[in-house]
Amino acid sequence: MDTISAAAIQFTVQQGELDANLAYVRDALTRVADRGASLVVLPEMWSTGFAYKTLGELAQQTEAVVAELKELSARHGLVIIGSQPEPAGDGRVYNTAHLIDNGNVVASYRKLHLFSLLGEDRAFKGGDGWCLADTSLGKIGIIICYDLRFPELSRRLALEGARVICVPAQWPKPRQEHWRTLLRARAIENQLYMVAANTCGMVGKLDFFGMSMVIDPQGEVLADAGEQQGEIVAPLSWETMDAWRAQIPCFNDRKAELY
Image 1 (cartoon, rainbow, N blue to C red):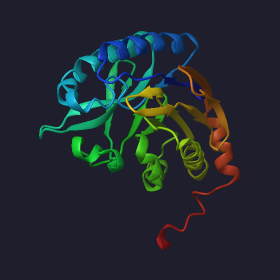
Image 2 (cartoon, one colour; image 1 turned 135 degrees about the horizontal axis):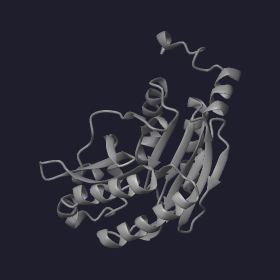
Image 3 (cartoon, rainbow, N blue to C red; image 1 turned 90 degrees about the vertical axis):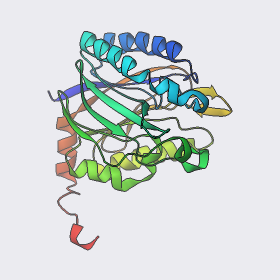
């Protein structure tokens, strides 16, 4: 399969309102499937938001939510990625993205870099490994939100063969230019596709700008969701990616022994 269609679902994640968030995603998955999408990225903590007071309780429901996503994935023929709270067993939770491929969980990734500025390191437990998965669509890597600021992680995924990196996020104003610049930089320096889903609107005291994006290996923005709720869909071409890598062979020209 040389060309696939990738989608990002952007909406206002309601803190602690699992049923409402799931209902929105359920309908949005149908919409993007009808538009021909085969890869779908959801925002970070899409089912619960950062509802710190009830996060442990909400994390106990993630298994049931994943079971429904597996059914939706199988029904629509989708690869779905989005993060949710997962019990860590020590009073904290992991921020975990499950990769569901046509009804099966084929990989999971626990957010490595916790955003200490907003206290994530107090409520969450960080992961201890990166995630690259072989899927029906090719090799897919996952990073979550703040991970975007650490280029070593994306480079490792690229070196291991990632063709696309998916980024669930809750990235607020006023750092929208950082978001756009870093997503384009990760695409350009690693010569691969980036599919990023952010939340939008007011969530608690934070104002989220959306700007979910699909970006190609040259850093061109193929689709941008703007600031409102909605979905974007754009094509990813492995042939185009391979041709660009052959034209500018950055990976062959690396001097890894020097850095």
